[in-house]
Image (cartoon, rainbow, N blue to C red):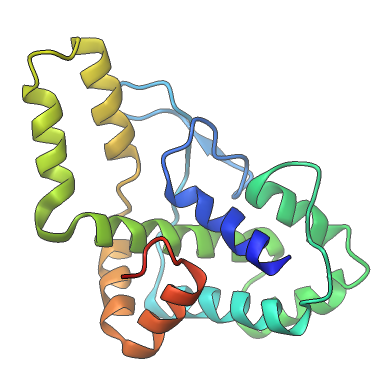
Length: 187
């Protein structure tokens, strides 16, 4: 079950046509494409660490509970947790780590995950190089170029989240936790 929850949250790391409602707020498509995207929220290093630690704690402490809702992805996990008989216990755990609600924690975790994924994918400027390749490809129609570049740029986290992600990855304990939770971003 927690593999599914972690995977659902981490599914947000990939460009998806409609990333559910992990934060229950969807942003307009930036920079000329039609994809709905998550509103990433700025994080402190401590918030990002707490978001990771909470998932590990909940995964272990409540491993016998099935947190799958009707909706796919993070929205389903949120729904299932809110409708769970142990909702109060979960919310107490979240509050101990500074989160005001299930949605607040999921938003922080998803924002941290997106930032970590971006930082790892952008090693040595790989994302910007990919954008340049797309923009200079004479075989791609302009509309497709615009949409592809827009989708890539939409996944770019706020600058402070990039810095937080780099700090997490530089911290050996959290780098290990990230590999555990986000195997697709681990090396």
